[in-house]
Length: 359
Image 1 (cartoon, rainbow, N blue to C red):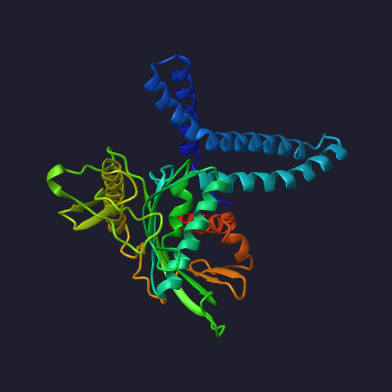
Image 2 (cartoon, helix red, strand yellow):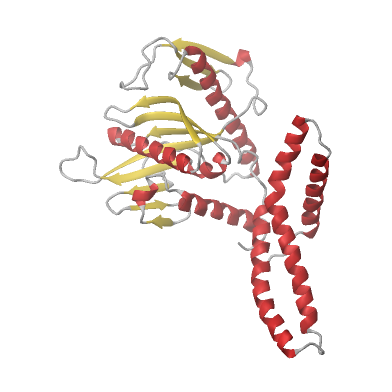
């Protein structure tokens, strides 16, 4: 069992008590909201620490009883049995506390910008990109999140060549951030008369929503153009000159939006640009910490894959953690928690290993 940082736990308890006392004084609304947010963020770890302390005190009492030669034999036998149960509980609480004390990603509680682009595979890739977007839409519905399309380019026979959406809700980025990468599908397309299995790919990028305070964009650093939207047709193609294209001159990043009015398109394009610049800065900082950092989005080539969806076999395989689930029908309908939880657990295990703690 790992040794817990006693000083850190005591500091957390003191901080929680301090926040509770400050909120009881009835401060101004903004101050109270800030205190309450921090207090809420500590609740889980405080509860686990208090439970751990209670369990260790109980263990000390039981040990005293076991070491007392004058104690009744039946009571000592009962204490010995309880000690075994208590040891398991303390170990579980220790593991929980270690997980709760891991460094938090500052963006975890933010919403996310979800970008899906058809890669290798032509029309079938666009159809698969559509399937992926609907999978995330359904997952969002199951978790009570809201999804709003910011920009989309329809595929020639359905699906999307590209779709960009905002996902709003508590902890969205923390659960979607491991979806970034190349997703591969193996299936028989509806247009395939000979029954041959085709392989196609789509890239997914998940970026944390950036607020104005997260990233500053200077007016002189952007060029804004209005244009008539173009595409394969369908509900997402705008036929007026309200589409907006924003170019960030220092980086060359280009963002377009053609879903709403010109004013709304400008605001949405700025939102996506802000998210991409924020993500670029996060990547820069992270790459300084580790040269072995994975790139978020590949070229869309079949060989660069993080996950494969094999329809003939009814399986989905995440290649990063060697996890295969034979429940593709449920995953594609948005039941993704088993996959997401496994990815988060693997990430936490890697964090613990880097701290010299066995997962």
